[in-house]
Image (cartoon, rainbow over the protein chains, first blue to last red):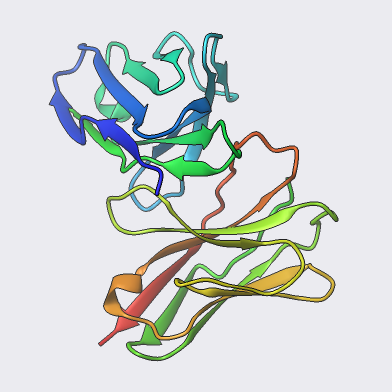
Length: 115
Length: 111
């Protein structure tokens, strides 16, 4: 089956630093990728929609300058959390929409802890 | 996309069937009913989806009410590995893949 890989799976960083999380579709091309954030015991919250070669569309309340999204190819999207603070600690999940048939596949998630 | 309502939690005994309900009274005629589940510390995993007819796959069955305003995910024999949060999501045909997750149902499976 189709695989979406996120890297790193977990990361710990100091407050004020920036962290980049990668989302790759390993065996298919993805026209669109989505980024979600999930706090403990809560559901997934959509942050932004990322289309290859164009600017990401952010959901209401999500700061685009804080969460930089780049979708440079049909197999890679990156989320950079800039100047991270402890309240940014969360589980970040991406999903990818397969170009061939529109099916969706989720990554395994990346856990960010900001000290 | 239509909103869904699910019970917050359910319990089941191992090896017994589990019926997870979902209400989606505002579903439109071309909307698909999707189910995903999320195991602890993992991304969501696709379970099953359907439009009008009941569906079966190796993971589960999906029973859709005749008026399509509700559906039930059926796990025929629950195992401990089925303990997860189950999300029922309505996805329109024009949907680009943007899924809106509700709170889902947390399924506990007792040995």
